[in-house]
Amino acid sequence: MILRLCQHSFHIYDLLLFSGALTILVYILLPHRFALRYDYIDKEHIEEALLSATVSNISSQQAIDCSYKEVLADSTFVYDAAHRAAILRGQEIRLGGEYQPDECRARFSTAIIVPYRDRQEQLVAFLNYMHNYLRLQQIHYRIFVVEQSDRKPFNRAMLFNIGAKVAESYGYPCLILHDVDLMPLNSGQIYACTVQPRHMSSALDSWRFHLPYRTLFGGVVAISTSQFTMINGMSNLYHGWGGEDDDLYERLKVVGIEICRFDPAYSEYTMLKHKHAIPNENRMALLRSASLRMHTDGLNSLVYKEVERRMHSLFTHILVET
Ligand SMILES: *[C@@H]1O[C@H](CO)[C@@H](O)[C@H](O)[C@H]1NC(C)=O
Image (cartoon, rainbow, N blue to C red):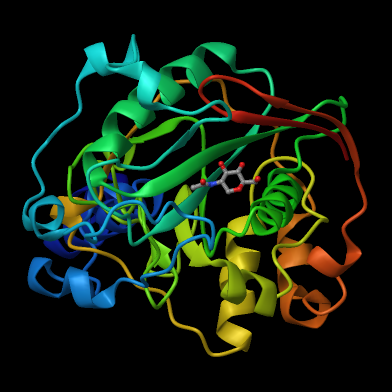
């Protein structure tokens, strides 16, 4: 009897069932192994998707507007570890980490906002690489590093709100919300805003260059200052790792703004290695109330103390207490 049962258990259907279950398990545990199809703006349509706007005091000494044809024409892999070590031709960068080309008038002014705490080595690598990378794009930009000085759990979204307020006070029409551990690999991922908010880091090396889910809107995103203001910025309530990006996506959904992406060949990023942050246990509950909170939790409820604002050679440093 026992023997027969055993024989029975090796039935072909059991085997199928087992391999089916295994496939599902692998799929659930390793979603990043599988390519997900998503809509994106292809190479030919990038230029027309851009939102051309600059600060009002941009130098008008140059008679001609910069042309972006060449910058946008290809997605050449430009990442070079050596670029992380030193600034090439650093004297062109103004105090505070601002740059504009001097051979033509830039058509885009971008504030790059980087929330930060305790990652000096990464910050140095980021600043060196980004300045080398960005100056190839003929845009006007400035890097703002917003540092949380207190020891409370890291509040990434709140630091973005603070950075956005500061950038707006300098007249920037376009914000790029940028993690310090991500660096772009392709030349054509222009650091300018698109008409629709754009998820820029959609092909991340640590996810095998695949997008894990379509509504992902984190890592590096570009959004116009007016759209960011329209959705009341981001939530101030996400302490610790995770959830605040999905909350931002919910806000855009509520007001009917769709996000966009560039061709994956333009959207490759590398992630610098670091220890994992402490997750926010409360994030799922918060996320469920995202649309209810959006008009009362954000730029209009932002309370913080600016401890210091200092102009460094490669960035504007805003030290805050949250
Ligand atoms: C515009 O004015 C701000 C504030 O005075 C200054 O920091 C910035 O360098 C100026 N920008 C340009 C492009 O001249």
